[in-house]
Amino acid sequence: MAQVELIMPKMGESVAEATIIKWLKKEGDKIEADETVLEIATDKVDSEIPSTTTGTLIKRLYNEGDIVQVGKAIAIISTDANATVETTEMNIAPAVQTNTIIKEQVASPVIAETAAIGKTSPSGKFFSPLVRNIAKEEKISVAELESIAGTGANGRVTKNDILAYIPTKGKQTATATVIENKVEPPVERIVTSSNGSTTHVKPAISVNAGDEVIEMDRMRKLIADHMLMSKHTSAHVTSFVEADVTNVVLWRERVKKNFEKREGEKLTFTPIFIEALTRAIKDFPMINISVDGTKIIKRKNINIGMATALPSGNLIVPVIKNADTLNLVGLTKQVNDLANRARNGKLTPDDIQGGTYTISNVGSFGNVMGTPVINQPQVAIMAVGVIKKKPAVIETEAGDLIGIRHFMYLSHSYDHRVVDGSLGGQFVRRVADYLEKWDITREY
Image (cartoon, rainbow, N blue to C red; front, side, top):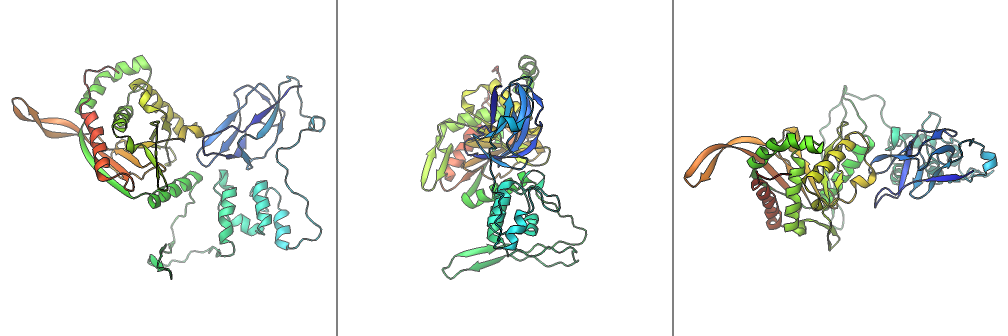
């Protein structure tokens, strides 16, 4: 009987582990090649893992909620069509061995209490073996473990959740079960230490009767942490340019039907904006950089991230790799594919890795302009506003005329540590120039 290990795949440069959210196949189930076996979640995105072969799932090596390192086997699949689940005869060693032996003399009753909860607590909340082992070592009680807000699937407590809780252990106050109708004005305090450094202390937030308290989901917490980190990391400055994009609008209106008929893709403004961006980045390569301490990393590849709103209201930024090597047709296919898979939850971790510059189309929400937060570790981001018709002065050989033109604002936020106003302003102006000088007679 041939047996094949299903391996936790590599999911991007910085992703070393993933949490199993849900097994879609049980032991003994028949599986086709490329059929989804389980769902996983990383710090970046949720994904599905397909089978690499046709056969029978004879052993699941991890449970839902377990954290698995990249490269580890997560299941055993038999390629024998008549395979049955007989784990005693196969002698398959489990991928994870947890310490379940408890000494006769337990030094602390808290340790015994935590070890006794098993995979689920008395309330039915699930805890992975890794979380349970950490709780045991840190003497975290069952009650404390249940009080930790989990960021994993269905609110499960992850390794990062419990590690973040440990420094605050014993300092938590009980949550009131009844909210009094009191209003206390929030006050931000600035505390100065003996060495002269200052710390901003968050104001207390009151909750009034009738207010609804909504726990952030895992993705919203990640977005919040990333945005706050960016603000603390980069000195944000924003430059604005108003661009006359009449040629772009008229050209797209002329070709979009034939484009869709020939290429099978809808032609939106986004790939047009990205083409102009990549051309400007080639003109100003010091926009395509990252900062590592006092070192500047000048990126060779131009990988454009495109901020995409999800049906849940959250945001994700899939990346078009080597965007400068694609023509408009290629960019359109990439934009549409990534946007569709983002909205349907089908992105892979690699789809959101490696961006060197990001564009956000705030105009799709009817916004005139925006001041987006830099997507670290990049140093700049551009927002494109809604396109509106305006009366404008048109210069001709016969003199100035008044005409109706299509205008939009470009907002360029950049890291003032390494991008000065001259470079930041010239760059956004160059993008506008490429859009204004769009060849209305071009094909695709």
